[in-house]
Image 1: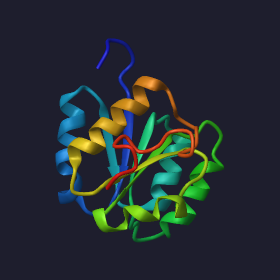
Image 2: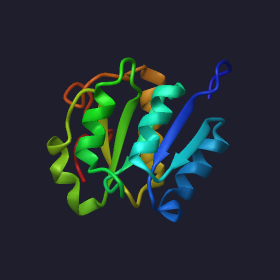
Image 3: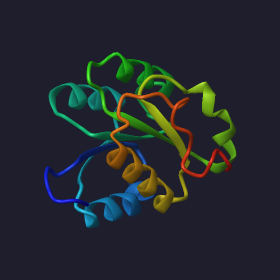
Length: 141
């Protein structure tokens, strides 16, 4: 990570074990990483703190992920969002497309998630639509 302001990332998932490798990769690269299992808590955190990016599991126990994405998109200056789904669900990409959505990545690929995060933070694409920024692997599962 380039010198300067430390980038802040919020991971929203109830599966700490699944996201531990991503957290470790991001922290190793110098990012500040926060986690929450709750979609409602994440919304409060996004409003009260500045995050450069969100990594959101496709299952959030207290809020349907589509509703969560919609609520995030209504927050002024909201961070860019990466939706994380199992490999077999990635064909549902446009079911969740919306303002602020950057891409959908495979849950089992922490390196792919970290690459998508780096691309977001380097290119400053926060708040732009998935339609303008396809998945880092060209949309192939």
